[in-house]
Image 1 (cartoon, helix red, strand yellow):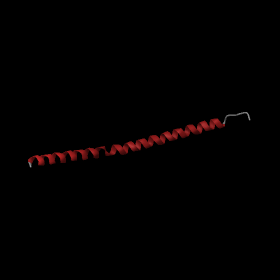
Image 2 (cartoon, rainbow, N blue to C red; image 1 turned 45 degrees about the horizontal axis):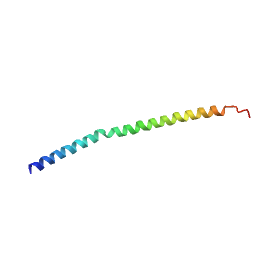
Image 3 (cartoon, one colour; image 1 turned 60 degrees about the vertical axis):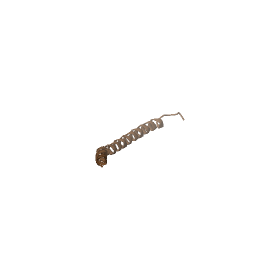
Image 4 (cartoon, rainbow, N blue to C red; image 1 turned 90 degrees about the vertical axis):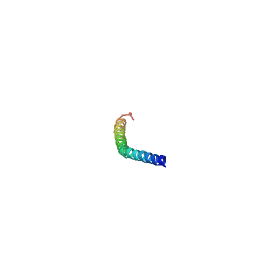
Length: 65
């Protein structure tokens, strides 16, 4: 019975350690999502500005017609 009790304690301690580690890493995922979303928004904004400038330049070209 002693071995089973020791094994149960070790399993409980290991599970507690895993839970604590999961809690400490929980904020990292949210932070990553926010940073990724901000970078995506920034990228789309830059692409929009470039497209607007290229379109304006293309519309300003005189084709002689």
